[in-house]
Image (cartoon, rainbow, N blue to C red; front, side, top):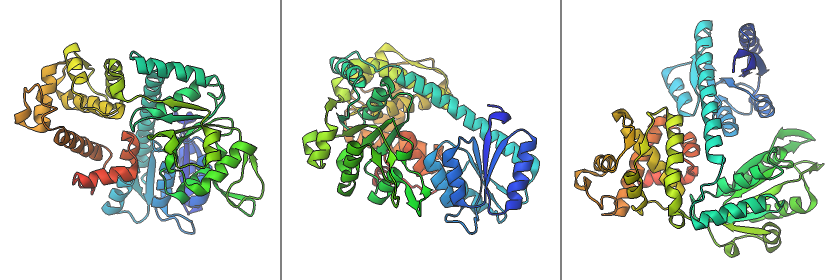
Length: 452
């Protein structure tokens, strides 16, 4: 992506600053859009593909200040680099900007060379992240790992149901890969070229409704919702058993009438979509209206736990290792057959997510040693560092006290990621695939300080 392909959004309450910045950046080949209020800036951001945002902290006459606008922008695209700008800069402001997820910070009046340098560095970072994301998606979405009997059955069910344009309920333990299965069904269906959107039903009720339906006032769109982006695509309702009762009727109406209303709207919008829902409980125990449940459960697929698909673990380890090496720019390493056998027999991992975290942790811990093949002894040495010398060279190192072992592993893993994401818990939550409120509870339970 060169400068001619990079589009930058400038949000500042001073029109002169917007003009000054866009003029400077246009001269070196960047395409710029401008907004003098947070509302207008967010609206423009939603409708276009940007590579970077320059965002003023002290936005006067706006609905949101810069920090609030930053949160909303990162909520739309967590990878977009945002450079905060202010005429009242200080170290505390800069630290707060970074802590809240901004890529960088610069003070007014601008040093043009410094600003351009920061923008170029941010864009390089954005391009690298995009390449990694595309590569990782290509690797993990290319095929389902299916060597075990249960995963072969799952693969067959996915292939069959993707050809039928019906709604689906996925049942499986937390971390078993239900979202991957939902995405896979979408990608194999005739809707593949349209959007796939994931919605966590554990969100607070008002937030969930706003995220879904958007908002209109006096026939003017104030906020776009997910339903605005999903026509002819697939929506994935994660944790459907938490779906608020007052919204269930709205969803049923959408499925029956194939149209929806933004909150406050007088006119409807056409909406054709496929619904895939998931839960970690038996579908008969779902807290859903009977008529909505009947509409959703055309097909029910059980996503097996990791313990039911041990034959797949070796290939999963290989995939997770390859992804981790690319994403974290680590030394290329493989696990030996003996190390893999040892991992398979640990009975330590409840689900695929935990296995992925474990593989990532081992590769990070051993990266400085430039090991090309990880042996069983390398694992035992790492366990010794992680759990203490009493565990060293013990065949039962991971099973002596499974609860303590898990807690210590989780604690070190979470501390590592807190530091990696500069104590931005929201960003960390998305990266490790753990719901934010659950993550906060876990951090509190393990007595981990979240202050930067």
